[in-house]
Length: 152
Image (cartoon, rainbow, N blue to C red):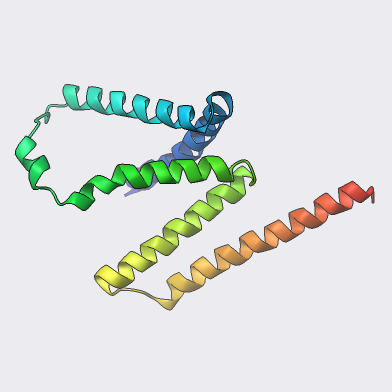
């Protein structure tokens, strides 16, 4: 279990690092070109991993039989990428990351509720507390910026 928790933690770190690299890429190349670089590199690496995998097998029949909505992962991926790049121009990395987490928690609770009929007041309270923390931090940060602008 410790290994799985460590890998999940590393995944969280990798997500933030990826977001920052992609943000810098879009600042240099522009949003559309940065997005293209991100997805082309990811596609090439995915293909290489498939080719070197011992489980490599292309089953065109399986692709044809899959429900259409299974192909929306890439659509939501590009939407998430573009939203991250736009919001990082206006938010601190920490704020962006926490809001991403709150969004993921909210979506997780909605999926649990609608598909598994499993929701608890503790989960709702947790999301509310994180959201309140973000609002509080924004107010404190705004007050500190105003204070430093006024020279006090």
